[in-house]
Length: 126
Image (cartoon, rainbow, N blue to C red; front, side, top):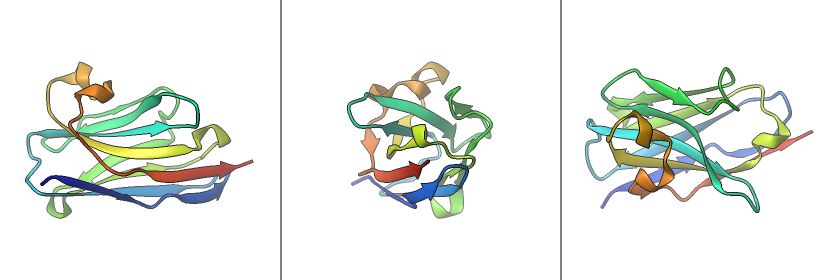
């Protein structure tokens, strides 16, 4: 059984930083891609960032580019999302997800991800 468990969310003031972690268990994800998505109340789930275990490629939504960094630790089967210069509009539930790597286009598509974590709340106060 594949499981993704997020941690690291919380309340932070605007301009602050948080680091989210996503621990993956159940199998080796060397051929998988990992993504972070977020969903604010009343809004759709949006792509935030993605990476591949097998490469150093990273991909970001325009709204977080330059502020957020996705990275992975293969030895720990853990993916991270470092979030700096946080803004109130970053407030959302953040989800970690995994997919069999299907190419760059699908990295930004939530429906392409087969496995999801339970989500962790990030609240940025102004």
